[in-house]
Image 1: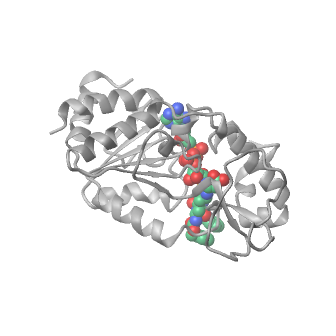
Image 2: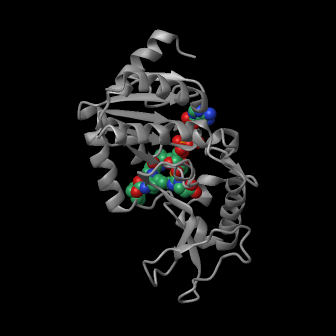
Length: 256
Ligand code: BV8
């Protein structure tokens, strides 16, 4: 764990920030028991998940891809937010209560930030509890809260064709409005906390550089160095479920 005076130096910066943003990845949910994308977790039934998480992979075998997503849904269903999620939600309340703004931009599709009480959340890559008609017979989303699903792939309740998970797959563009909002937030942020992401997947991985170019500070929290570490103003190595509660409670001492 970083020594006290470094943590206090960072806490002072975070505590004084009026427009902080948190940008999170799979690592913040790892301590809730949800596997990350890389490393040993990057496979499901010996399938490379980055091949499954593509439109081509889905069209090739909608049943198998839905089986994978529903397995992940069943995993997520058994999890709860961890102290890292709660610390971010608490800090949002503190900053907003002082007249500032705080948004969590997440790459995760598990919904745990909202479950922990975060109100302002931008889900860059969608949400595993929602689906939409593959043929786009409507723009309406279908909420599928229960798991396991009765059948794979689930039918569209409107046209009877098949539903797809409401997530962004590799090779698919993000919702332009979501990109616009996340770029605006990153450009206005005085501090960006980048938590639990390997910083490999774009355009999400580009957001910290937007903050830096606009004069904001980037603080990385990760178990290990990443592609962002060199450019970050500070990099704290350790578990987000331990670092975030400590750092953000110290930040409250410096809040103006
Ligand atoms: C796009 C949702 C424009 C689905 C995800 C070739 C062809 C097509 C596209 C590309 C291409 N080459 C590059 C691209 C762009 C591509 C990309 O960036 N690829 C990478 C791999 C090079 N991006 C895209 O395709 C994006 N769209 O660019 O559109 C376009 C269109 C067509 C053609 C070109 C461009 C869409 C990307 C979105 C993909 N969807 N998820 C689902 O979840 O099923 S991505 C998925 O992986 C996550 O959402 C996340 O974004 C991403 C990375 O995962 P991380 O969150 O970082 O997690 P990871 O496992 O990697 O790392 C965990 C980290 O946590 C580690 O650093 C670890 O140390 C740390 N950690 C672990 N435990 C803890 C911890 N830290 C702290 N505490 C702990 N306890």
